[in-house]
Image (cartoon, rainbow over all chains, first blue to last red; front, top):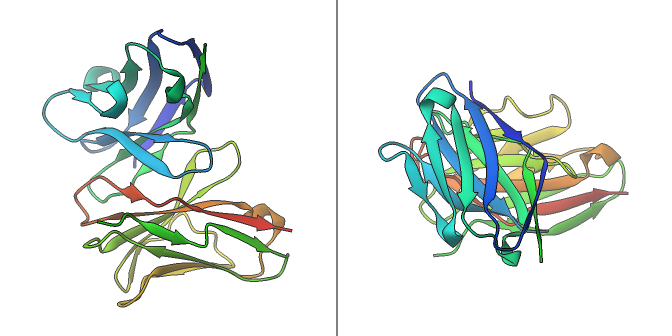
Length: 112
Length: 114
């Protein structure tokens, strides 16, 4: 079974500052890991995903995440926050059967 | 290529009525997933269907909720005798196969029970 823990339900950064959203996972099989973004009253949009291969994954809108097996982590980062990055971010994990499980989400606020 | 489509986008029901939520997967996708998002919470898995089959319904409430994905037409999530606690956003996702990993999400249906 898979599960995800997102540390911090709310994160606030200043515009231009580093964004770091934390995600730790638990999986009994080699995991697929995902970050999705949700803007108000909208569905989820895939930011990036890790399946196999390179552990540093680059996604859309300047985001990237690094898979660290030893730490069971998949933290999301962006070097410089933009006002348009304000949204809810969800980390998710799935195994071999598309049994995707989501974290509780982290709401990112960007201050001018 | 149209994305995952859900309708209606907003649905209002009175307690005791039935709610039917529809999901049309992306073209070429035969796997559909339903999730529920309560206010201020993450997405909770409900059910995973393939054409004419329920693969995993471990997240479905035991009563009042059912789902189908017929050979023709959209997937339907049906909630009978709705209660206020059913008010939530219901999201559908689809994938082309079981091993692709990525699920593509629709815009959701926001159900309000009065």
